[in-house]
Length: 480
Image (cartoon, rainbow, N blue to C red; front, side, top):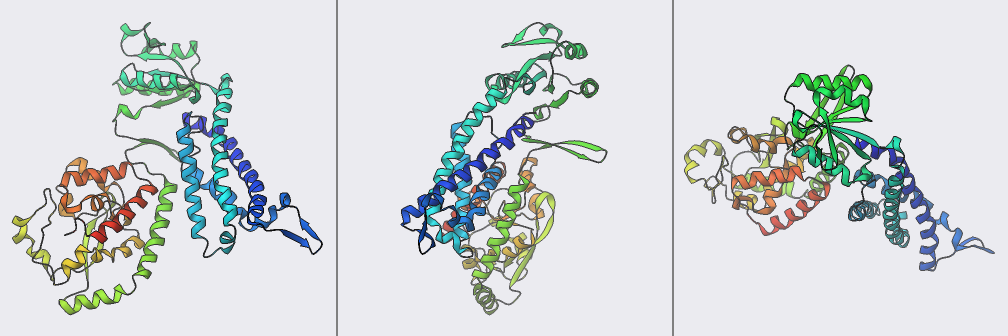
């Protein structure tokens, strides 16, 4: 309902932003040439006036005109078209332009034209940022004016009168830019009929539904609670279908933990999915591309270690160079995780004799100065060099660079239900736990950190964790 309203204005917002990039381009091209003191000569006898020097930067025009719009879309800057939140406009547009600038900087080696246009880019991004913010402030006014058109206002009938229903009505009433006008409430309690919840009337009971929608303007019906009879709910939804009214329900009817609802329609099957972990497919695609690019670069960059470490392991301890262990991935998928071997052969068979030395609570086993370490094993573990082969797990797609550490099945079987949520995403080489204290943290705190990562995931958060991982590895913080 609200998303449809936002999508209605999306083409206009996109058009404004594209027009802005053209205007900024037309301003910055001559300005950057003027600042750098360059002149453009069309012939020995004629110099092109600076105001008409746009063609000088045409070779990078596609990049600077399209990339900002792409990243504005990917950072959700177009979702909040109607919101009166200047801080959000500044943050979302600035975030998109910073990402664009980073991409352009990384292109300098393969795209020399970008390097030659530094003065132009230096002017282009701040001015574009200002234009994008102004565009969104302008869109707020356009949206508010458009709401005066009664056909664009959605009249909403809420079924339910509990605190969640009241809270929803309050949100719609105090945010007119959303384009939602409350028609009223329906209740399961006949004694509430005729009363008001704030300024909104309780029009009748659920049994009066057919009459209510006949006598009032109703575009959408939102079921929030108050009815436990599934037959009644189905009857209301069928009545909505019959007269062309949208029917929706709040995820709070089932649980407060669901954060996203998606509708799927495949041939004759229609389904609604309530998601407790909802990550944008577009962002996950970029995460995957980032994982492939960085893991490939690290595999190549650490090329000497692929020779030195195996030779060192073989020289100090008999047995294979790599250690492979079955781990649990996303939603219980099993895969083989690789590490450089840091313990003696058959170390797993000695585990039962060492359980009394475990220094971690919960189902995890970890001890300092493990007697099973080889002569270089503890060094490899403390420096995290033993984790390098997991870069190949990342390339295969079993793991990500950043994500909850993959457990073994023996540990998973001891998880409580809330702890199993950490298996809702692809596991990673590093995570919040590893950069926050690692072995110094209690098991439940570790699980909470993983859930915190899952619920607040973003590409920016991944970058922060990777940067903190470098520091943690260099300082050998928390590693045993």
